[in-house]
Length: 344
Length: 258
Image (tube, rainbow over all chains, first blue to last red):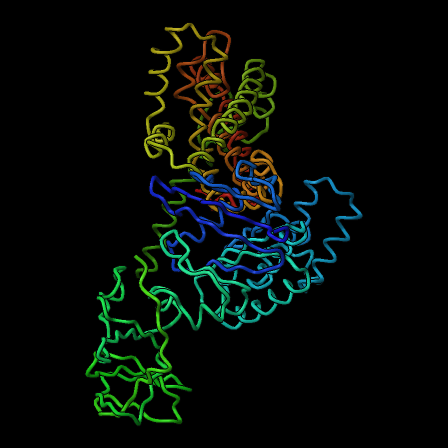
């Protein structure tokens, strides 16, 4: 019990009159990285802002390190937050941005100097301490924002899509950096993102959110390979959702059925597969290639099958997909993931 | 051909804009007894004379005090107002903005007459207070516009960041917002100062016996005396304005706000 840093109890948040988060229960353990993953509007940022104290929940409680902090204002919660926009103070150099919170605590100058120096080293910015934010690159600004939050040694660090403003290469680099820092400092983190790859790479556990509720909570491996609902399956890249009828016949569920929240018709069990699970070039079925797009390592194609449209992705050196041609293919049922059921 | 034409137009515009100033300057440098152009000989005689007229001295001090006090007041009102308008989804925000910036477009004579009839006379407001109040009303729009423009660059999440690092709401404003709108506040101060210092139409209604701002004093002086000292004083004031604007442009890049 004692290793629970954050505990949300029936947290409900209304935003502009409408409920944005519904009775959320969540425990975050010391030292773990928990991702709140979901599309925009799913309530992940709202939840994070409530944890930080920037939003007052309509009901429910937030416990931080064993204490109820629901009514404690943000400036006395001791929660760190790295903003999507970094929110650096433009008039202060990097070192003073980082020292900001320590100065407010009236720490002795020697301690401030020491702690700022240490954290600058940790994020690899020692040479840039005197630069103003405008004189730093996006990645460097990101590091300053991180250092500014970490130097306070928060019980809990919240990160709001911290990598979304970086280009692809830098994003990957910062992702590794973030993981390294987290290991080094052991900081408990809540990581808000809509990027499944980021969540999978960084998280101890992932909470997939949808419309203000947690749809599935689990280790990255479970979320990736054993989605518990259609929504999670689709969000994690399962493109083709098949229903298997009692007699074994397969049918591809239409997009409308996939989107709907109603449970599938009785007797249908749901099988989900990713495009790269489809075998092309051999198999008992035949299909026409409706569209093909070359991606370098792999080719993506859309097959018009007797079950319905199926997305396929094959490695380029295995087989070729040419629009208009007919190919043999297989949907190995054994490789498909069974989804327990749609959420009602 | 077109080049010649545009050059001519450019010259005409410059003459039109700067001509009056040149005429006033030369008239002020006249050695003669009356206000004439071209000047009758050149001397600094009237420039010196300006400083010996007691009424100019007291009204200059009043105008200076008025300009500083009303602009400071306008900042005290305008900065929080601009902040509130920028940060909070206030009801009628657009209407508030329009009403407060109305003095920019409503003719000064109208404002002056209205203020005198419905406020100064009815409530028997002392002259100094009437002047201060009216000039503050005239300078608030500049503060609202200019400070509002620089507030647009201070994102709300900067304040939230300061708040989460332990600052109070007020502390976050003082430590994060204020330093980042300082340039805008200085620019607003200069604009407000010039607006108040050069104010004629509204001041006409507000000044009373024995209490006069410099521009009003100059108008009065001209009614009875026709020597070149008014031209000399005008030239000096214009040079002062140019100086202030140059310093402001050099220091802040004032043109960004206008």
